[in-house]
Amino acid sequence: MVSLYATSAKAQGVWKSLSEVSYKISEDQFGELYVPVFSDNIKKLEGKEVEADGYIIPFEGMFKPEHIILSSLPLAECFFCGSGGPETVMEVMLTNPIKYTSKRVKVRGKLTLNAKDPEKLMYILKDAKLVTE
Image (cartoon, rainbow, N blue to C red; front, side, top):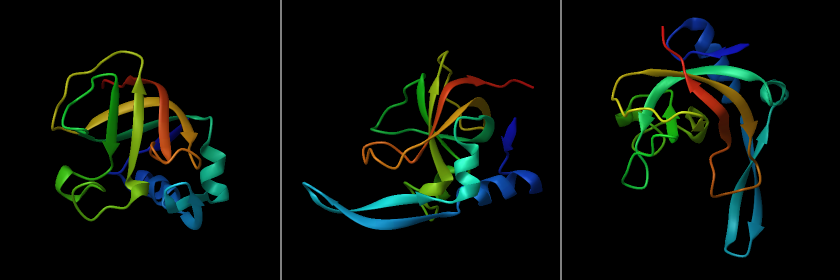
């Protein structure tokens, strides 16, 4: 299992690996869009069970307890609200709903890479469960 801990030195290395993404410019019916190009290190993580910890980011004005956005950065610094890039967030599809908290949470699931659907984030954790310590 690969750990994605943003708080430890080891985890920062994995989040750092996730940041090894570049973009190519493509077009769809709406115009230009940036398509992620994943590094070999990122591609090695695809389909693997990983643990990620971070902060739950409410989206679309509400919290969905079985589908969350997890940010390696606190809300004020996250991709949607502050200075973080798209590589600092992932969608998490949970097998069991969780309660919203502003505290750091840890989840475990299977990492999927998304370079095709612009409506989704580029990192998606599927069949995820809340990890309790």
